[in-house]
Image (cartoon, rainbow, N blue to C red; front, top):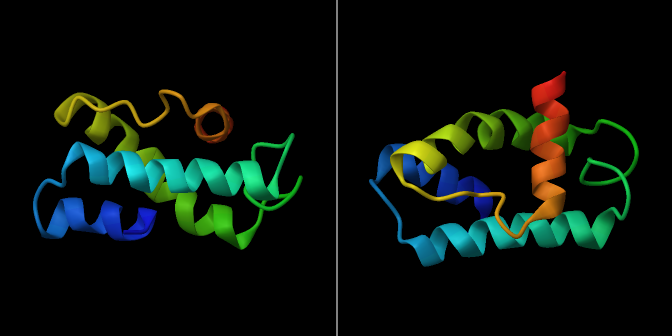
Length: 90
């Protein structure tokens, strides 16, 4: 299950398991680690189309996961945490 499938499925199909949530956000963190070592973007030091697509969903769903589902999407995911912080500070 991809991260975007997971995000959409919460609104369309009900709650997913914690394992499915963990896997989806681990995949997103792996993308940060694979493509970017120092910047809070997915591909490089610049804002890209990837950020345009993912940022609104991840940022808006963070409180939903944290408060409603009691799941912290950034725990153990420092790159995702930095990315969310960057967009929160904008």
